[in-house]
Image (cartoon, rainbow, N blue to C red):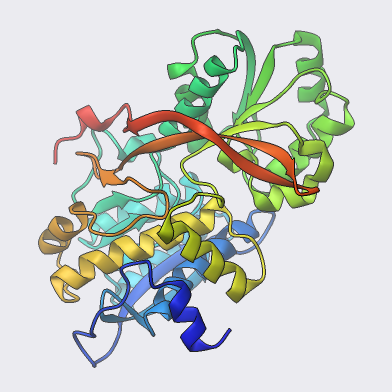
Length: 387
């Protein structure tokens, strides 16, 4: 795609603006997971964020920017070392990129203690949403629990009354099970914590088979989700025990890896690639043209994060001093690819949630939006935040 055509595909988003400075670009620290089974998640986030920068010819909100990308390897100590180096040696004051909540737990405190700014494109752990909220910490994706609350409501809508629930034993996994329980009105007949590095789920499959729930909720992102779903199908469970899951357990990459076995799975999300609004259509078209693959919601969230940062930089004319930047960020003056978006009082999203389903359309499987589950939904911790 030539530059003129590429810019045309993104004209629906508020990216075009004159540059405010021609000096050294503002460096943005992008710490993410690029290796291991979850590596494609970080790659999608990095590529989408860079797509937004390139659409504005190296700028966000008219401000020259440069992305400093580092791989945390899904290891919290490695993420901590990277952020310490970026703060101390590179003098970076604005950060994003982290995918997994356990890594964010190591990265965010150093950023905030250094009076720098962190804008999350994915992880939204509960411990940073309530009493430990911070003026310099923003989340554009979701608060972890709210994602799984939407799956709990979807399970209600589908008429499930007895559920088995599973998630890895780390912060996001614990938030997942707490969130699902918060809105699910039926009975949780079994709760299991898996390992973040687990590859064999034979024991869990046996317990699910023995319990015979109406359906299974599980949160297993990236490679974990591919392994879990493949083994679930191989165990013959999909034919008798359906799944009602959150978006991280079924994205376009997982669907490609799992194939026909995924048909019929119900899930919930705040965005899908078939959304019929101008910013989303432009983003999907530009991403597919640039990278020759369908964007996951990880890409969508990172793209929205770039737009949100760009909107704030436009108002501050590139100044990332926390007080002015916070005022600008809270306005959320950008056109989100997901539609309606605003920040709640704890600087986490208030947004709509949707029911999706893996269906065959035009001869091939796809993830199809079926309807709205929750409207203007915030999170359970906002009232505890005192900023």
